[in-house]
Image 1 (cartoon, one colour):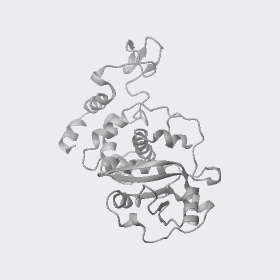
Image 2 (cartoon, one colour):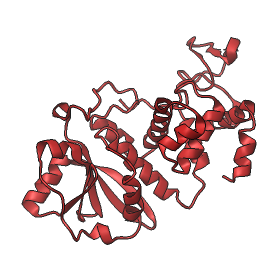
Image 3 (spheres, helix red, strand yellow):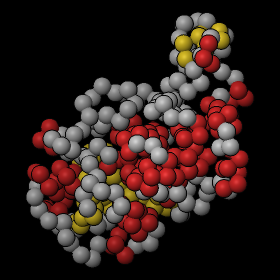
Length: 285
């Protein structure tokens, strides 16, 4: 999005909210988020009540954007700075928001991206509590003894597109097994362990915190084919270096963000991010 168009959008809270609402309600036709009833009663403070089920809601109820009590202008600034890959510390500095507020907002954007990925259900089924209404205990990087092995993502590229998909039936233990028994080469990048080519995948990737605790061996192999490849890996490698201390729980968020960024690299991703953010939070539990 050109900066002049963005500036026009955030000239006032009213204009910013109008832009966001365009992604929330098709043709401005509102309905109850719970039962889809269109007959609603208008209440004070821009709230509405469903005539069928009695649910009271406002325009952003049940959506990713309904987080943190941020204004529409603040949300659009955060999306723009996220799109431009501005560091969290710089966003805090430029917006004047607290670090915790910015951190939660960026996590929400990443959750919205993950929720729209093809394997979102598989990620949640693996045991991750990522804010989709599931009741599982979230993984905790601070207590890895209580965590199941993190999942493995396979990187597959075709015709300029990348698919970073969770691989059913594999987890971090599988990577160790392949390394010890089948000489699969592995290397590490911070907290991330990745492998040489495996079946149709250019590389397998997993979070190394679990492996460091339970299988303290080095992942320093050289000559991995993925390291000399073009496309997604060199694109993502430089970005992964910026992420400090990738935890088991946040690992899928970063992988799905990189998948989204790479596949949107020739497009204006701003509107797509806003559309994801304005979507209803799915119940994937």
